[in-house]
Length: 272
Image (cartoon, rainbow, N blue to C red):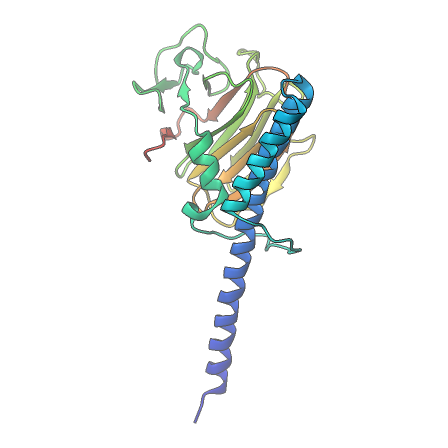
């Protein structure tokens, strides 16, 4: 005799897997579509603002870009509501991987800015604790800035935070005061996501809570300077966390904050 309950359970499980696979495919299409739209916006804005292209050159570039995008993917038009927790998908087949491959920048820490309780390792990829003070360092908050100065273009970098209980990953203007007692705000030109205990939040007059189903051990940051966007990604499950939109007018620098007694963390490289 057939176990109806077991049969229904198997049927539902199979259906749920099919739905999850379908959602992930749509999510991947959304990321790819975002990648192409972002590139096209930059092309158009540069041409209009700087008047560096003639009409013939402009339309020629647009035509070439359109042909390339058609070869790689022809996105379908759809309306879909993704589950709140998002979904994971193979990184090598995603638009996120294209962003990483094309826009990854080598970030190195600036030892002259590091808080006295932070030490920059020889390869300038890690931070450790308990080192002598340095006059040009941040002296109140456990902060270190990094190179390069970012004043145009698109850039991606990744930070391994591990199992830290508290951290903040920021992108800030290059002119922050180093002796301030309070961390910089959005008004001062500093944008971030933060972990405190078990709570994640993003900037605002009242910080917006972020619900993450999977705790990230690594955070990806994608800056599009011309579009005024900073996007944060949970690289543990390859999902988008949050995008900040603003108007950037000064060079920006990656800005890192952890507690002095925390474990070391490092900036990931393209070979990781």
